[in-house]
Length: 273
Ligand SMILES: NC(=O)c1ccc[n+]([C@@H]2O[C@H](COP(=O)([O-])OP(=O)(O)OC[C@H]3O[C@@H](n4cnc5c(N)ncnc54)[C@H](O)[C@@H]3O)[C@@H](O)[C@H]2O)c1
Image 1 (cartoon, rainbow, N blue to C red):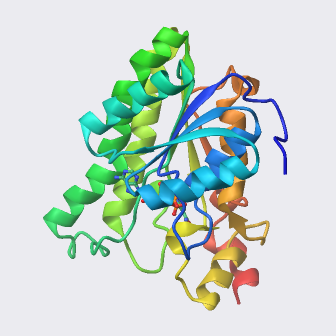
Image 2 (image 1 turned 90 degrees about the horizontal axis):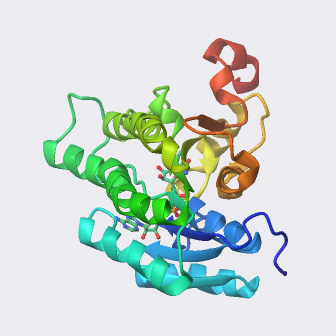
């Protein structure tokens, strides 16, 4: 496969959590990093795990993309600062930040009655604080470049209680990602920085690789399209939001969910029986 387009030509992108976990379905970070590179961007593959990062770098090199790995924990301010410095040092400037890092579970499922404070704080640190920190360090670099595009990954969990097993900490962290997005879009618009977020639905991607076939099929059937989404569906939306094609779009939540957010449980009942 060769580079398939030029929609991001001459742009430099940071993708967080871009690594690829062995034995898991393709993740959003991997898919986005690969598609960005295939559209001509130079991509800094950022991951806390060096082996995961190396797998994505290899996938990008296979499609003849330009890339480099950077090991960082995006919950740490110093790592985020060094990550931005590495992008500038290796590729000259910074245009795009794809804030993908996010986890669920970490031993903290349930309602507010079940939540453990340590788990709650860790969830907020990884899913929310990390995005604030990467932006804090990336925005001055983007201002130097003359503008840029930031894309944060939220979830339908931000807008609906989405799973049969409750997970209030995850949902709350993803809701705050939307507030963060909208505030930053307002505060940095005059610097030519667009800030948007993608709201993925019931994807079959890295995070849910270990669910049962039955639950996987049920997730597919809940949405109007009735087809299964993957990390690549989110990645194509990210290509659009990263490119100049979306130059007049900022502060939006873009659902990538097969139409799920347009429905109610009753509407979909015939497809779930
Ligand atoms: N899979 C779904 O159904 C679904 C639905 C809605 C939203 N999302 C969101 O999509 C995003 C991507 O999820 P995914 O399952 O595709 O994961 P992914 O495979 O894209 O990312 C996992 C990678 O992130 C890295 N990582 C974890 N913590 C890190 C840290 N602190 N610093 C740097 N790297 C770190 C891991 O090492 C791993 O390589 C998440 O924000 C998730 O909440 C997923």
